[in-house]
Each structure stands twice: as structure tokens, then as C-alpha cells.
Length: 410
Image (cartoon, rainbow, N blue to C red; front, side, top):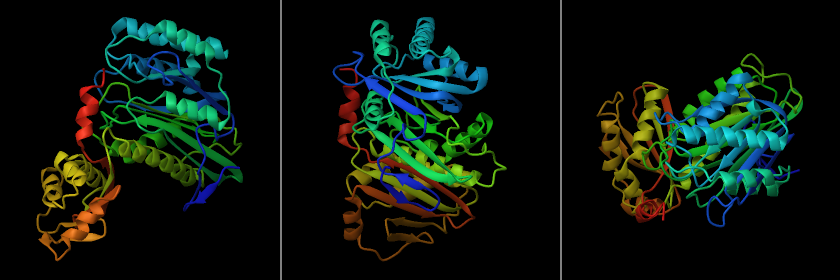
């Protein structure tokens, strides 16, 4: 049994992954789509799984998204997800769409399952075609396994400019049954979701109908993945998929189930942790920044304000330089499209109260600077207007961001 740590409602599996839930396996390998690194992976369920997904809001949705939507339209179930890195297969026209359908067919034949039970995802350079000979050979060599090492190979295969793999897993008891949920994600740049250049996959052995799974995913995505930003850019491929194969044996979950909140807590925990890992691994980032807004007139306005602050280039560069320039924070609040009383703002950086009722308090700038040199930074804003609450996550903006993106294709 993997090591665990207790949280309020659930147990976090410290060594857990997407293969921790019953009936799930994975694989990842180097297919030759890029130099030396793993670039092709698969997640597989022993049985068809109730599934739900959310996608980028870009007008230019990539071919893999269209294929995945087509698969889910049949019966809202999936049994396998094929993911490649190095090539986004986006803005590739009819040929790119045909290639995406072809890879779906190849994986279905390889795993001996119906085509509509296969989803496909791609990430990488936009406007390039898939290397179909390498895709075909790579798919033929994918051998899903339930071991943690197989999950690690998958986690590595989906990365682009990421510096670290991203995973999280939890357990809870529902109807007296042990229910497990695991997740894996990638994302480092072009991160301003709704959605952005990020892919996330969540597996669970819970029994839950796809319609309720979709409701839960949409609600929680708005509070987690849609609340991160690295650079303000939105891309073409982003997808979050949840697969629930029901092998835990619980009574099917729905909003009417007494333990529905437990399931929501599990999905929120996995989604938030993956989102924070993406923000922390932003291209060139040295710090994770969390912004909490309290006292807004609504949760929506609080979330909007939090994302404005964490997405401000001036705030991000101040955090990078450990500059206690709180004026940049209040400036971001000022241009947020929310209701604000200019006379009632509180701002704290870490535990250091800087502004109270819009007036500067006596604080130690040296102590704030020392805090800003840490790797995780928390900024709190209280508007004192209502009960609205929102969180957002991002990172600092360093010189390396320019270096990474100036040479992305070279």
C-alpha cells in the first residue's frame, strides 16, 4: 500500500499516480517524434469507463480535440487515451484531422477495442504534421502496465518544455468501498487556461455516470485549472479528461448521493494540485505564486480579481526580483473588471500586512523582501464588500522565459 497523508476528507497517496485506481494501466516510450525523450504514451482501463472532458476555448481547436469529441459523442465512454508530444497537430487542416483519426484506429486495433472508446491528445509545435510512420511503430510497441514505473514513463512522454512531471493521487471511503483517484498533467508555457497549453488526465475507479462526471469536472475546472496563468497566452490543444471505470464497486454517484461531496473533494484535490504544479513549472519560473481574494461581491468577481493579480507582468517581475512593490498589486485590482471600494482594501504579502483599509501600515520592508525570496509566495487581498472568495495560481517572470520561448523550435 502506498504511503499516505491525511487531509480533511481524503487520503493523499504520496507515491500514487494514474495507475493507482483499480483496472488502470499506462505506458510511455520514445517513438522518435523528438530527440531522445519519451514522446508517446497511453492510459488504458480494463473496462470501458464513464468519461467527461473540457477543452480549450481557442477558436482553433486542434485535430485531436475534434477526434476526442467524436469518440465521446457515441456513449460518453472511453477505454484508452493516446497522447503524443513534440507535435500539436494543430492548424493542419484535413490531413491533420485524417492523421488523428488514423492514430485512433491504430491504437484501437492494437488494444482490440472499439475505435470510439479511444481519445487522442497532442501537444507541441503548432502547424506541423505528425510523423505517421513513427506514430504507427510507436503505437504498436505500447504495452500498458499497472506498475508505477509505467505511469512514470507516461508522465514523461507528455511533457514539452516542462522541467518536471506532474502527478497526484488520493483515496477515500464511499459506501464502505475504497475509491481511488489519480492524475497526471503537463503544462509549462502558453498557460492561461479556459483552457491553455496544458493536458490533464484523471482516472478513478469510482462508479459515476458521465453526466454527473461532466458536471463535477466543469465546476471544479473553473476553480482550479481555469485559475492558473503563466504568460497570458491560450493555445489550441488543451484538454482535461476524467475516466471513471466503476471497479471500486460503490453505488453509482450523483449529486443526490450522500457522499457526493467526498467525490467532489477528491476531484478538487487532484485538479488543484495538478494546476499548482503546472503554475510552479512555468517556463523559466523560480517561484509559485498564489493569490487569494476575499470580500468580493461574488465568487466570480473574486476569482477574476485573483487571476488579474497573479497574471500581472509587473507583479510577476516584482516577485522574481523580490521587490516589495505592493503598488503593482493594487494597480492590478484597480483595472480588474469588478466592483471595488477604493477606501476598503487590505493587502498582505505572506503574513505581512501591507495595506489596511487602503492605508499603508507600519511594516518591515526587509522582512517582506526576505519572504519574497522564498519559493512559494502568497498574496492576499480583502475587498471588504461581500462574501466572495477566489484563488488563482501563477509564477514569477524571469529572464529565462524569453530564452526558452525564443528558441522553442531550435
